[in-house]
Amino acid sequence: MDASTVEKAYILSRERYAEHGVDADAALVVLSKISLSLPCWQGDDVRGFEKTKEPAYSGGIQATGNYPGRARTVEELRQDLKMAVSLIPGAHRINLHAIYGEFGGRPVARNEFEPEHFRGWLTWAKSEKLKLDFNATCFSHPRAAKGSTLSSPEKEVRRFWIDHVKCCRRIAAFLGRELKAAAVHNLWIPDGSKDRPFDRWTPRLLLKESLDEIFKTEYSPSVMKDSLESKLFGIGSESYVVGSHEFYLGYALANRKIVCLDLGHFHPTESVADKLSALLQFFDELLLHLSRPVRWDSDHVVLLDDEMRRLAEEVVRGRALERVHLAMDFFDASMNRVGAWVIGARAVLKAFLPALLQPQEMLRRAEADGDYFRRLALFEDAKTLPWGAVWDQYCLEQEVPLDGQWHSKIQEYERVVLSKR
Image 1 (cartoon, rainbow, N blue to C red):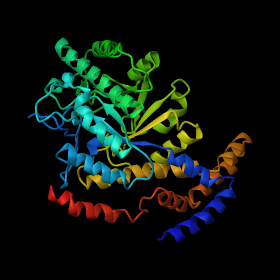
Image 2 (tube, helix red, strand yellow):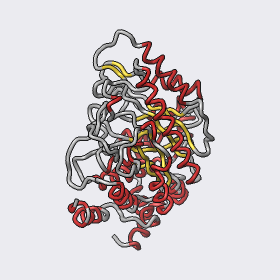
Image 3 (tube, rainbow, N blue to C red):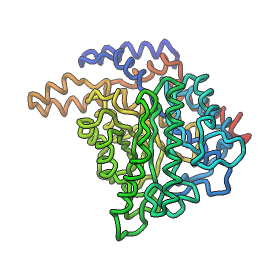
Image 4 (tube, helix red, strand yellow):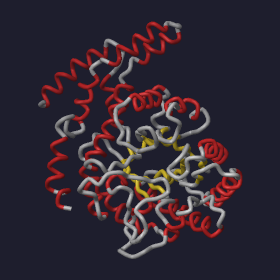
């Protein structure tokens, strides 16, 4: 489809939306301001670049598949990220785990990580006009092998992980300061029990004490923001997770931290979308980890499915776009990894576009009048309004390939670059 065809289709679609009181041009302006945080770990199956003989992942982390072309070095990972970003409309961020530092080919203990280990990422981000987020890596390590980190009964183990997270917060603040955009530092730990424990109280008390010590050092929210990520269960922690939703909810509310909601970390019958209007009554901001659980927290690539659309609708209806941080959290090694980034990011943006194009004033008025027939009819009608033509126009304006046209870019990249690794 050429540019003139796209523009003609958009003009007709814009008129159709205007009949419903919707300004399509304004929706595209808002969409252009949505910034996604891309997970660097999709590019190398959560392996990182530490010089170690330890397993690549452990503690509830699992990437399945062995598709050719995995990034083996920092340079290859950045090359792949650059390719992915070139196919995603808008301006976005890269989310780093601590194990992705540049350590000069020598072992560096995690409690000795320094900002200089991420200087290369900073330089690259500046050159590519990207922002960065950061995560402590409290897994894939001998001191996480027993299933406990910040809640470990062993004082020296807790001390190690406390110091690691302190290092990571300092690195996140450094990156945010240098890039003049706050880096979100997210903390997830794998601590829990495979079978029913006798004592659920002590680990949570120890985790609270560890967090209290970690957060003694305060940073300006202009350079770094802390978030805490809960989980219902994990591999090896099926019966008990120390950092549960209730634990982190209470801690974050009491200590003015951000709560992270991962789409895969709740019971399958729970709707994360429904939680937004409740939590944002009490929190200034939330972090969303956008993933796709298939029967369990399996971190599949995000798709334009019902849950993703419901989530986008709730953010838009609550006028919460500036209060919600959108980060993707998936890692699929069964397919072209670069293509997976693009599928996921474009799916998230597509979910937000029809949410922005819903006839909100008509819906609000119908609900206020108690006209539930009209409300349901508008919901249904909105599903078939021509938002696809609006999406094509957005891609055209952002100078990225249309749907169907970017696939060949990935295939060529695989032929020229990935196949030679």
